[in-house]
Figure (tube, helix red, strand yellow):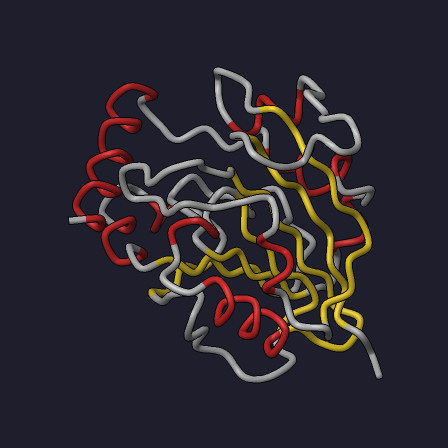
Length: 209
C-alpha cells in the first residue's frame, strides 16, 4: 500500500508539473551545507530515497551519481531513463554496494519512510569511504502520517558513533514543505528542538580512524 501511495503521488506531480523540476537541488547540496559545486567533482554520490526528479542531475562533474529507491524501476516509466544519473532499486536498510563505495551519501526528505532508521544509518556508515559525508534532511512527525512513520528530533541518537555530527540545524515546518523551510530560514531557537513538527538538517562525517 505504501508503494502504491508513493507512486500515485509522483504520477500526480508529473501530471501537474508536466516534467519534474529539479532546479532546487544544487542549492540544497551546496549552499545549505557549506559546499561548492566543485567539491563534488570527481566524487561518488549516492542519494537514498531519491524519488524521480533527478536530484543529482546538477552534479555533472561527479564520477558516479546514483539514486537508490525501492521504486526505481517504476520511475523509469516516468521519464527517468532520460536523466544522466543512474537509478538502482533498493532500500536504505540493505544498500546494494560494497564498503566504502561513496564519498557522499545523502537522504533528502526520505529517511522517515524506511522500516529501520538504525539499520539505515549503519548502512550509510558502511558504504561511505573514510572521511565521507552524509547529508540528511528529514521532516519530523508527532504521529503516523500516510506512508511516513513517527519521527522525532532525537533521531540522530540512532546514528552509530562512527558518524560524527558536524552540523545539525532544526527548522519549523513551512506550509509549503520541507525545502521551503530551509529556503525561508525558518530556524528554531536553541532549546526548541523537541515536541513539535519540524525539519532536521544534518551533516555527518565518517570517522577516518
